[in-house]
Amino acid sequence: MKGALTRREAKERTRQRLLEAARGIILAGGETRVSASNVAKHAGVAGATFYEHFANRDDLMVALSEQLFDELRGQLARQRREALEAPNDEEILRQEFRTPLELIAANPDLFRLALRVRHHPGTPLGESSRRLTGNTRNDIVAELVARGYPAATSAERRRLEMIADIHIAATEVLALGHVSGRYPDLDELADMLVLVTRGTRLARSWTDRTAATG
Amino acid sequence: MKGALTRREAKERTRQRLLEAARGIILAGGETRVSASNVAKHAGVAGATFYEHFANRDDLMVALSEQLFDELRGQLARQRREALEAPNDEEILRQEFRTPLELIAANPDLFRLALRVRHHPGTPLGESSRRLTGNTRNDIVAELVARGYPAATSAERRRLEMIADIHIAATEVLALGHVSGRYPDLDELADMLVLVTRGTRLARSWTDRTAATG
DNA sequence: TGTACATCAGTGAACGCGCGTTCACTGATGTAC
DNA sequence: TGTACATCAGTGAACGCGCGTTCACTGATGTAC
Image (cartoon, rainbow over the protein chains, first blue to last red):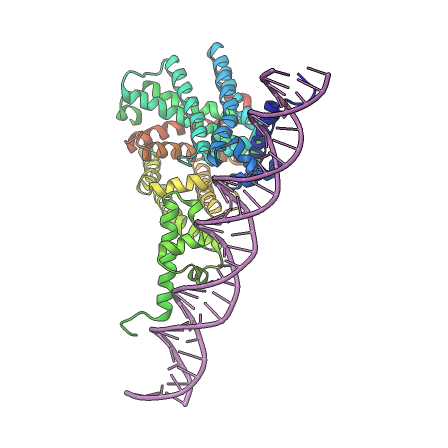
């Protein structure tokens, strides 16, 4: 134990510098500029050093993807669990919408990145972003089941997935409007999302198509 | 007028070959592979020929972006206009949702491309994709106003935009589920979208926040 | 504690690659007379 | 219609660039005794 860094610590530090450099580049919208050379340059190390820490560009992207979305995923899941313990009334539902909106508003760059890479198949960032949405969808479906929505048949379960997809999409599109400056008031957004649930709630008694549309 | 091609025709033909090559590459998910060299290669011409037809890569992208989304935009607008002329009942509303769903289902690659590039700022493809959504949003807002939704104050107009955003987002996310194979039945999707309108319809009598949540 | 050796994080230089772009050139098409 | 010249679509070769990756090397840190 000396005052100076141990070798292992120094190496770990360099690795973190590389990851931070890559993170900075990518959150600034420069996915395509995340190259081994460019990341090394931004981290202040020689190009060859990159390969002391990562096998290649893709290896870095895998590490970075996990780091970027894991914390967000954890926070979302935790807050959702907490909200579930409260009694089930309208104000609680509003609160359930407010938390993801706040989380997004606090991390606009990360949110925009998630949207940007979501439909890029076969890339680590895309996978990670889709995993984030997938988890949320599963959580919402579980919650709907707990609230008494039918989930006996595969058609019923599919409808629950559709509802979850819609809730997520509605939350995201309003949150995007917020971070773009068009919808400044988060409370207003939460209210609007509650209205959406009033509509999809009608699916609770939806047994077949004609029953819903007649 | 000869049997063979005139010079002008031959040149236009080459230009179209380049555009088609680029279109093929991009719809197959290869945005990054749309380089002057690669497009020329796929079109079967020399690299230098590319510059006889386009100033640079970006110039091609501008031309391509317009070509890609313009037709779709036209079809969407036309079908929406036609639907508006019919009497206003539930089945008509369903039909209004079915047409964009069918349009998307018929052009899955184009739809996925629109989603992929939507959040890429400063690129011609991104601009074009956002223009497509923007038009649809304006159309929906106009329709809501025609149906008697309040639009006197800026808060009311903002809420109409929110509703339009939600309708578009819900349509798109269900359409994505369809082209991904999860939601095979378009009628079921249209029914679900009608339910969403049942919820957002409540905003018609929404005068302030407490009125909506109380 | 001091010395001799082993380990290892980081480096500079080099390689081939595909890219964007330019340019002098070719050979076919168009036109003036 | 035939000839001589002008136009022009397309080409191959060349350039510099940033990239991914490798490798022999350096100098500091760690360790055995």
